[in-house]
Length: 308
Image 1 (cartoon, rainbow, N blue to C red):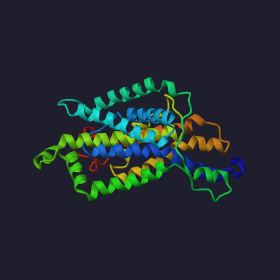
Image 2 (cartoon, rainbow, N blue to C red; image 1 turned 90 degrees about the horizontal axis):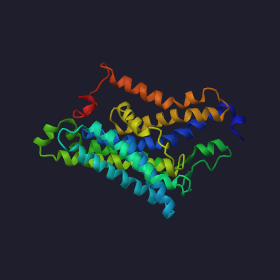
Image 3 (spheres, one colour; image 1 turned 30 degrees about the horizontal axis):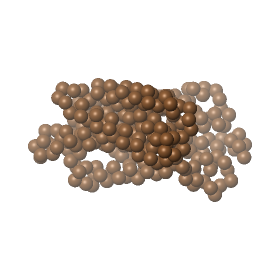
Image 4 (cartoon, rainbow, N blue to C red; image 1 turned 90 degrees about the vertical axis):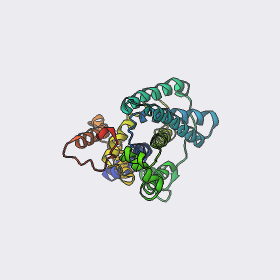
């Protein structure tokens, strides 16, 4: 049974599968950026972490035969780039936005340079969990063929929620992000907290990149990311700096990214490139809405330069 025989019924199935696959890197990058911004720092360089993570994961998987080792090394690569970002932003009168853009260029440049030998070879991919094994419908089986990183992302969103709202360390992080003066008066280590938060965000972006190269689309190329690291910043704003909302927003972005291929799968080929632009249109709409003077900003961390 193919997509055309199912007709329009296959569209929600394709959107479901696409939302799960496309949203997975968004989940990791957005949660990483959320924790970073909760410390009062914005990292616009996560695109570099994402691409560098994708390259290192693919290279390690190809060289060792272990895709999970590739995920681990991608997290380390992203963490190191995050550490560099945190250290540079700790220097007085340094603009974190400018540093983020610079490190985005650095990360993507290093990935392109070191990744040239791995464009053609085929590396082992991450395994998937066939949750649709019980169905005879190929489209349903495909939609429910889920990578374990997706479930890890869900667990991480819940863990971040409890960390920020139920732990002393989460209170410390939020205090640093809301008022640097208050945090210093309480004796909180402001710079160390922000560096650790930026490292955590960079590591998660690296894991998100490993999904791109080792699962979907499952290869390494220089155009792999398509700006997902930048879009994650808009996603965090849309989620109002809340991890569970970031999870749902990632699924929304994933469904938007899957719209074009899903329509093509049922035979709708007109305006294909227009439908593929849906995630970028959504990002633009969110940024315009969040920039409005009427938009509430009470959820934004007080020290975040984007809202000061």
